[in-house]
Length: 383
Image (cartoon, rainbow, N blue to C red; front, side, top):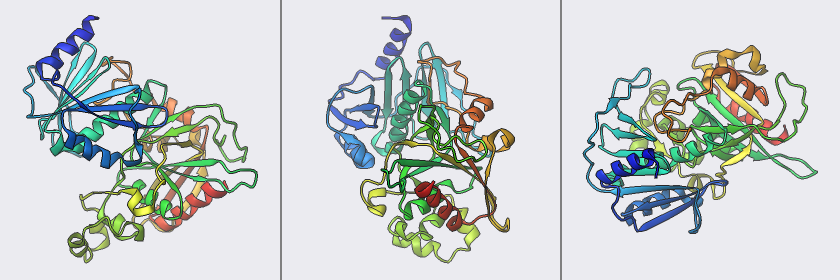
């Protein structure tokens, strides 16, 4: 056993991570199978309901996660504060980098996460904070894909079977935008027009070998090797999104619907209130896929009151100002280099090279989800 592995194992034991975890749940995420172990059957039941169609039969797994229900553990380490994101003030996490891994403690719930050297451990009141366990599981999947050479994008994504008499193929479109632009809202509108859902807020993209479609657009090589991988996390939407899409009518409880229905449109869209969208219930079964070619990227660069909506293809090399809308740091919960805390996220040039392999579309002017969604479904179906 290496020194790093010993340190991680000893700390896990000290925190109570050696407790039995007799219950298991298996997830099939395409090219990655995961096993979630726990001492709480109730927690795994909640995770089973959340992950739905991705729950699989028992079998070999590439990634194992253990979630131990219990009181918040005492951490015998000096922890550093994770500075809040820009525009935020509340401290949510504290952490310590270790030989071979990292420990993260959630400031509000006391949940503790220890990961590195193939150890993935969540401890504390897991059942009361099942959303944090879901995020931890998904971050282990993200880390797995980053180690395979994927770049992480801050994007939603949708896909559709292309109308092709010779035999359709799946086409995919990523959707990103600057803060509050409405990528999740647009994804729901495109789903209402028949698209499949791929991801809500994080997207992993990897070059591949597929030939381009040669459409002659600027900086476009079609699906010239770009493949995108979604995260098995349900979309979370605000009341404005739900109340303006008939497919999402059941998402908002009746008492909330009455409370929100009389609010002015601008105030409704600014509400910091989110609902999970169980896609099978809203759109029918089989509408959530985790992999598709990435033929294009739509960047929402619009604003309310911005006049007529404009949709145009642009060149990634000539519009570096759009790239930050898609770029996403791996964050506190990923150690892509197998425990190397000195990991550096790819720079803007890496994203520019990646996005030169697909169509890049800027949507500017005023906000018009109907027009943007019509463009997206037309692009997906007909190319």
